[in-house]
Length: 97
Image 1 (cartoon, rainbow, N blue to C red):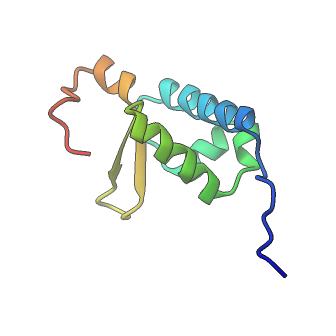
Image 2: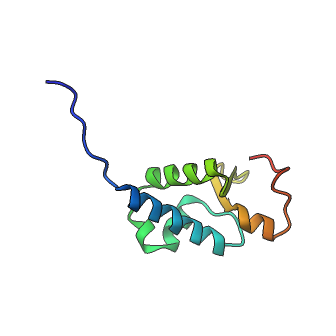
């Protein structure tokens, strides 16, 4: 029996919608957020697994829309919208992320 290939669970449109919702949550938050905090902010994102949300955030980070860093207190990743960082006066070109 040859390898079985299953269809993706989410369509491209759904993935784009998830990305826009994440950007909306991060744009409203003045501080960096963890995945659980992002999930709690939006009902549609609450149904996603943390793995899927991490994948969406990784794609946004690769595009340069989201900055991520590791929290020193608990070792978890924190995410912040690049636009919010610029709005708050950070020099995002010099930031290490």
